[in-house]
Amino acid sequence: MVKINLRMNLADFINKPYEKEVIDKLDIIFKDSIKFYLIMWYEDGKVSSNDIKKFLLKHESDLHFKTTIKVGKELKINDFVWYDIINEKDNDNSNRIRFQYTYSSDEGVLKGLEEFHKCAKFCTSDKPVKRQKRNDYESSNSR
Picture 1 (cartoon, one colour):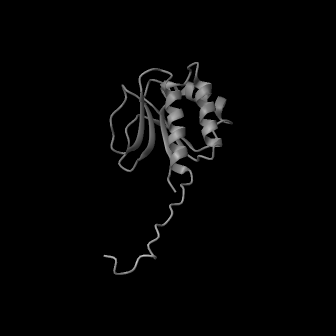
Picture 2: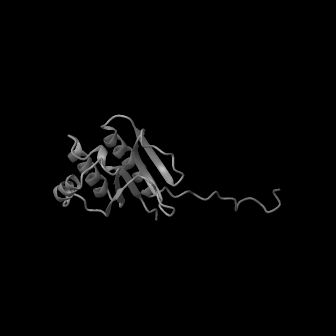
Picture 3: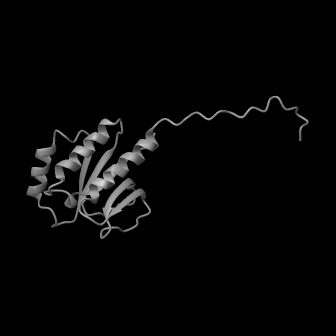
């Protein structure tokens, strides 16, 4: 079983017109039988603690999955991110990230969530059973 986690910059969608769309898309992905952990990060000073509190109270019922909010984008030595949705100005090309979606426009977060959904669905869905090639009709001296 693959441990799927998704990392996003909270400052890129909090208090934006498409904030509710981001939360709705996360809910759709969760309801599609994709179990994942959400890691949201922000740079110190970019988001106020009051905004975070309002955000959590407003979307508490919509976030059905384990959610962590961190200050700073740096990954610790044992951290691993399965899918990272990141703005190109914040990209650091860490080797502890499996998949990464980089965007340049504000609404790129939504496109990144669509790509995460496709990737996670593919990686967690049942794979077709491969048929075994039969060779029992060959004699053992065929070589």
